[in-house]
Image (tube, rainbow over all chains, first blue to last red; front, side, top):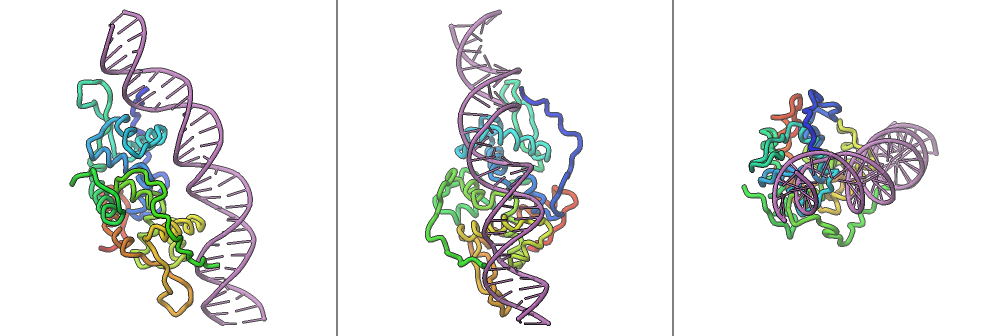
Length: 123
Length: 123
DNA sequence: TGTATTACTTGTGTTTTGCAAGTGTTAATG
DNA sequence: CATTAACACTTGCAAAACACAAGTAATACA
């Protein structure tokens, strides 16, 4: 059942570790998977299946959990799919799109310092 | 006992999830704590105690583990302390210093999108 | 020499993860 | 319109990672 998107009325910062913007960001996307989902969204992927098919092989329960957290954090939203279908699609909000420089910085670092990596992310 | 720094002869990329530079970076620093240690190093902190005293309160065993992983990953190295003492200090390598743009991007994002955060990181 | 500090390690219980399997819902096909 | 396939999840369970407290060994200082 596709969740009804209850939008979690208001649970802003239950336990923020510190007022540091870095710590605060990591509370939202500081793990092995979340930024890969955001990478995929930036690359134009938008559906559950798309994220599953990425080469890193995220488990479905982790993906569900992360999408929920990203939705609660205001980084993604669900919208009607681009094609005529009635299914929903995930999309970055402005807050999520603003993470592009973060992804770009990580990508550039990886390309320079981790031999054997190659980018799919443009720009 | 301060570890002898065995330097782990050669364990380059045991299990890389994909050739994506982002995924590869996250294998090294994709968690709640690692980038905070790097933040502290950029801020000029260099000793075990310094990291412990950061407001987020990293547990000591996690700190030990992360420092070891960062050393194995070539992001930090141990050098004689600046003061006369015989104790060691942690320092970023060139590879570690190259993560500055990543930290800067996360900081800027947090400052803009997470209300109530304030930066210690300059530049 | 004694005490405090530093830099850890170890132990224990809790939480998170990874994997497989199952479930309801929508889309495609005959 | 009935079946089937694909999709978007949820559930269960073992294994790993985490958080917290306590303990230990080596400096540093008095």
